Length: 535
Ligand SMILES: Cc1cc2nc3c(=O)[nH]c(=O)nc-3n(C[C@H](O)[C@H](O)[C@H](O)COP(=O)(O)OP(=O)(O)OC[C@H]3O[C@@H](n4cnc5c(N)ncnc54)[C@H](O)[C@@H]3O)c2cc1C
Ligand code: SF4
Image 1: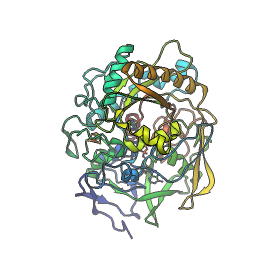
Image 2: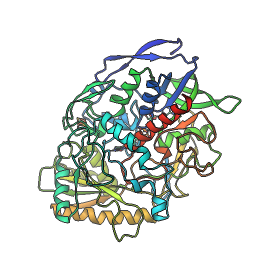
Image 3: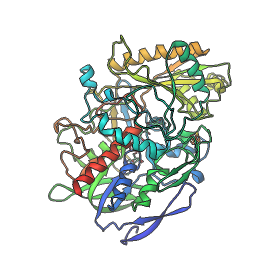
Image 4: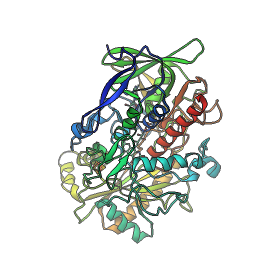
């Protein structure tokens, strides 16, 4: 039996596997908050609640890794970072799950994110006002701006002295930019010839040693290039080396390998306890508030399984990805795409391109790629296998890629539902319907032409494109109208007053920027708003 006694102390592993003292709460003790999920949405909020003196417990389905001890520079062994429970895909453009979009473990998908952290631009939040399609957010850029600033400083974001796009910044990035890898240098060359401005990207990996509250000194990036397989040095600001140790420092408890399955209500319709599975044993944690941060697939799935929070019938609706086409080319130069920081160069010149037939826009980014990932792209995108795949992979060291990160509109036909198939726990597997709409097709066609031209001017041969939809977005939309949204602008459920949602599921639109920074900003804002209501 675990967690049976109140006011106990246990330990959690630090980056090297050394035990950090960690507060423990008893399951029969009434804690203030249970946070479900410890990724970009769960971890910042957990630290904020703990700092305010709340008794906070985080339930995380995956393990608590010690990156320096447990991570290898090996894609295969690092598959342990991906959520590989089966998810069923439907629609004309079925979304591949697993390494494409979701992680498991203390730190969630940030364990394997590339750490590109551009801010969205102010007009990103008002797509409907600007174009008459999609929806506006119930909050604007100004509401999140102080949190972007706080995050960039806390995480130690590396970035340029002057960023060419978006609202003028009120503060500098914490650290100077990271060095450009091979693909970034080639993209810079092609863009310059095409008159497209580029900049070293804001990246949440450290270009120098950095002191962090509650954590101590974090080491600089060694340019190892395996960010998507987990960072062994702690230079990448994944949650396991930033907000999680901070939360533990302030008194939060992390319960790893604890899969939340049920939310129990009291007679007044408030959540009274969270039931979870820990190594096959069912546990029940009593709590005053629940913060659901399980990501845009597991959050709606848990609500649908429990038949909760869905008076609007919007739970699971409005599923989105990002438009994310990649264009690859072969170069004379030795590119070595597995080396250097993979998230290196960015351009937002295509944020609102002129004379186009689509709403919204996209940004351009260089890509670093690990060998197994690239071989998989070749098999999926070009249908190569056997000798054809081997031949192409012989050119791997001369390969470079660019991708876009662009808007994707919500459509009624794109949604998550519970299927009739059960998983190993006896819970229904989710089925996700997804088809790109006309807007996404036009945007992607525009971007493909530009990316092919960049590569042609940079000297590429054998250029090919791979269309994809990274990230899982939407499914528990935030909004002002309780008939069209699941949570209000402060992340609080319209139906259950002590339930909050803080993850990628509450995005009303996709935003033409990588999502993690905004998920974290929302998480901190939701925590602050919540704390203001209870203090
Ligand atoms: C390869 C890759 C590269 C990426 N690169 C970037 C990038 O460069 N920049 C960027 O901004 N974004 C990037 N992303 C996306 C980014 O990582 C995610 O958008 C973000 O982490 C999502 O945050 P979240 O809190 O919604 O979910 P997650 O971070 O996925 O966290 C959800 C957590 O909840 C846990 N959980 C789920 N269900 C349960 C349950 N029932 N009980 C207990 N725990 C549960 C999961 O195990 C997980 O730890 C990338 C993603 C991938 C896959
Ligand atoms: S390139 Fe830098 S941030 Fe990425 S895994 Fe290597 S050390 Fe970590």
